[in-house]
Length: 455
Image (cartoon, rainbow, N blue to C red; front, side, top):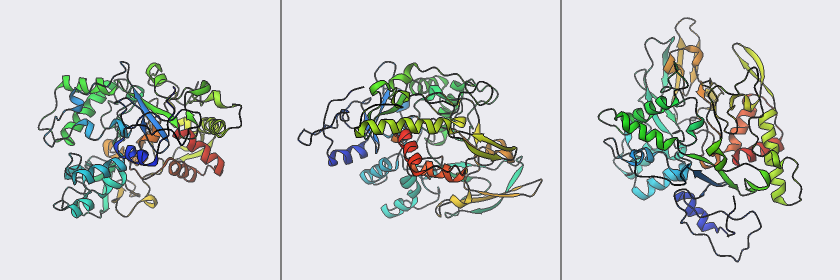
């Protein structure tokens, strides 16, 4: 992909970062400080700026139809699916976008509804200052409150709650989670962070799982008075599964499809995917990403060529760097691609969930609830900010387990992890390096981050 050569002035970048819409990024050649600024007038499928460069969405038709139910209010509180899933914010929401809506509407935008957007549904939202306090987690982490109970049939019970907002109980825990992007869903194996809408008896029926999710979101988040019609669910899923999104330009590596590379969204339109393909086991290929193979031995001494070689180096680290993972079942060697195993997408190729230490009590921020659970049989205790899959299955072994998200379009949708606790992709790399005691060098961390920013 090639772009018209332009200079992007600081004021344009700032405005575009808030609006999520910006004109074409600069060409891979050097830009001149005397050239005119780009205009913020790209269409719905135009490149959208982020801190690493530009991301772009593509569809099979080359258009974005905004007339369907995804963009319509189907509930009672003014929200649409688009309220929490914006093209300019990686088809989710980001703190910058949330803060802008808060400021421009004085928190009257449909996003700001106390039942799930506030830190507690009972908090005061009567004044601007009260609303700033009530929606602080939404503004800082772009998370929505998910209220789930502890099932009485679970292998565990809620032993203690430390909720700064005095609301959470076994009847309804307050769990703060990032809205997952609704793009690249054709490469999906599990729906929701905890898989609660996934049909585990027929994991290949992802379409029905997505229909369940569309209805659940409308009933719970948009507060619909009744379930939405099956035909409406089909239309929402048809729209969602038509979208593919990826980083198309990096400020250092520039055009991500240049000189033989396969970055950008267009290759995703024809990329094959099958649930269960390339999962760890016999026949597993750890070289999940091959997008930047052409840049491994790239010639040239320019800064752009060096950045491209480093992207390729980061890809190799992701695919092949091994580290030890210890579980109750024993220890084994793993790579990043061992969990993010869907080829050139990086999501889970099957419905597996993992505990990667994100919910651990030592990572807890003071403004997030902390829960203590007790195993009913062994009396063992565990503290967590979010028990994840365990609330759905009731199994002690599912504590803190979450699905593996796809990795394309990462740069467009900070912050990261299910709880938004990692502000940057470098923070993500640092967490895994510490949690798994990998021992990355500073250069390896930088190269891996550059690769992730280019997806």
